[in-house]
Picture (cartoon, rainbow, N blue to C red):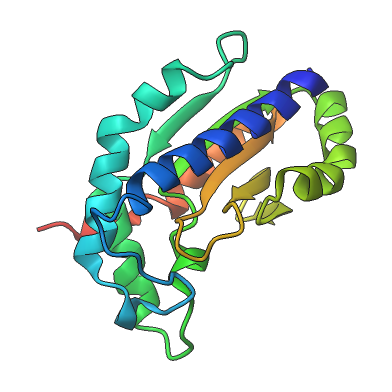
Length: 189
């Protein structure tokens, strides 16, 4: 399974690079430095990126070498993005857009405890080898997992996220997600 996770990381990283270059390097859209705060990054540009990604991600994933790997993915909804923008724009400390919207594309893979421990041992080497943004172990509000971020060393590309869960944490993570990550639905009029 270790080789499959490495291939999953490699393929997501490759697709992130390919998609980002196709989207940002053709001159069709204005590039914005995502190290800026939301005050300097137009919301419509964020939503346009999300919509284009939503409409095209399957074309990239179908050509990836991932057919034998069980993973799930999603493109964040516009509502969830707008909720994050609202919440973080209200804070006095400014946060870079690429630190807040680091999961417009997100994938998850579930491993057994022993496999997850092996992956954690390899992540520093993979971070360097694949030029990943970072990775960390999250343990907050009953939500446990390893988060890996793809950025391809560009402040003009939105980071993508891979969550690696331990099979024993799936039920608790889903429950935590219901409680803490879906509040924006309650605010809709």
